[in-house]
Length: 100
Image 1: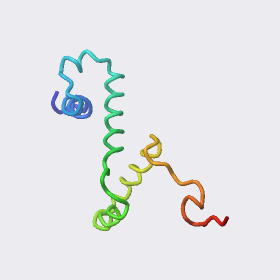
Image 2: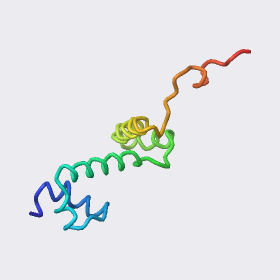
Image 3: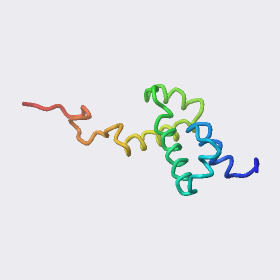
Image 4: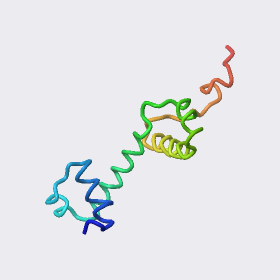
């Protein structure tokens, strides 16, 4: 059982992160367990680069290029869930100055 993908992918993250007991996991339907694991993965991605600026990510990405792809996924998820608003106009980006 310890080499089972179910244990590695479902049981351990649920027990470790969500503090679910073995009895709770066994009593929960598989579809709900899958939903919890997916939500946990989304949450981890959503907060994986909290505290870093885009400039700091650029410096880190020079040494480890895969960080850039993970950071882009982080930004996409933050926009998806409404944490970051993407700029939609040139004036809000500072490209065009308003003349009155």
